[in-house]
Length: 314
RNA sequence: AACCAUGAAUUCG
Image (tube, rainbow, N blue to C red; front, top):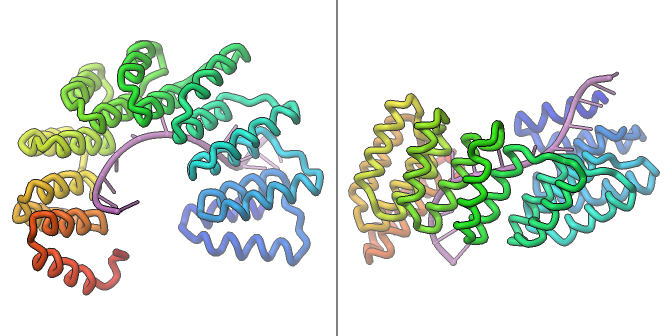
């Protein structure tokens, strides 16, 4: 409906509060949202800290005998999964099945993500089998979700094995899949492997984007390999890929943690010069680094300086 | 008929 379109537009412009006003307006006027509008509303509320309001809308539509669609359930599972409410997500899934609605690829992927976030790897494995017996084929989303989930569960061998199984299947691996694997390896401290896959993806013609670069840079930063990180920043530039605040933050953090606060500050200046303004993550790393080096005075100085910064939303 | 759902990167706690 018209409401549905307007609400999407508002959200994409960051006007979340206006969506609530619109919802109120609809309620006052007695306008009944249609299915798509309910879905959109539930999605917006659920992803913006108003999950319980979203769930009550779902109850409301059930009470009004508006039949939820597979999408409604996908949205609910996604919103619940993001905040770790897996049990409720799974209950929603069961309700969906009781209504004899058939989950599609997106619904399955969404459930995998919810299960993976909660570390329910075995459950996810069972659902993978169920998906396959239902004749639903996986896609690249499926595998990046599963690989990410295995990484979170510290099952690195399984993550690598799964990746290698799908790497050469057309359309089943992409830049996101590589990035998920690189991140998982990096977080586990397996920087050699992370670097190996990073090189491999380039050889195979997958262009790393700013997220991929940030992931590998973070891995190496955490391993204290500052020289290699510097090399990667150059490689990035050569690839025409611009670093963003998150990319820089990884290196700032590494420098601060290593007690190289002077270098960290220099990097901050470079960031500003390039239009990447240090944010709360940056300052948090700096202050923490100074504090843990015993430079309490300087840490406090930075803190005071940051407090003086006007409209930076820190 | 049309509009609506899924995946990857940074800090401290």
